[in-house]
Length: 219
Image 1 (cartoon, one colour):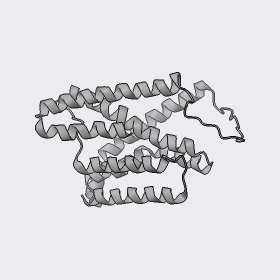
Image 2 (cartoon, helix red, strand yellow):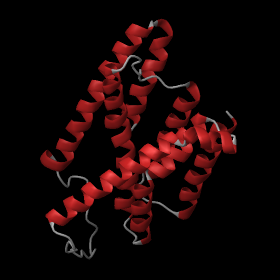
Image 3 (cartoon, helix red, strand yellow):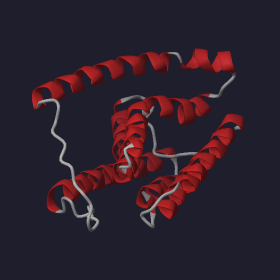
Image 4 (cartoon, helix red, strand yellow):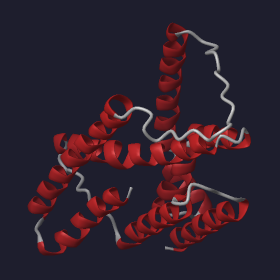
């Protein structure tokens, strides 16, 4: 996560002394590197070093869960869910202006807070369910994995796709956005570094999120 933050900070810092063409070239280069690093991370975790992060506790009981669905049904449900999410997301994007005018919210606040919550609703629900089942490793993996997927794959891919349009999108964020990202990553690393959690650490992270949300709301 910290490497991703560094990759996001570099374009903002270097773009101060670059023109738009060079900034876009830098963004494209960083995007390609991030996508390659993301694919390498998947290969590392799923192939060459599969299970390397799974540390079994002594005396812990393991319960194998039998899958309720077969591969065919699971893929069909996944396809239907993907199409439904794409349809809802398209309607959500077109309704942003109306929502902003109705509630007086800025597009930045809607994009950073509202869309992020709604867009990751499935991951949030899964993480909460796993936490209730006392499977904190999976809950944290869902939260962190979803974040890395957006930062290392989706965002860089959007930069590359934007090259097909008249106004390409550089990988440059504003100072408040960078500060929010750096703060969130540092807090996550500090809290999860010891491999343990408690309700006060969770409350601390929620408090930090609310503080960041208030900042973007008033920005």
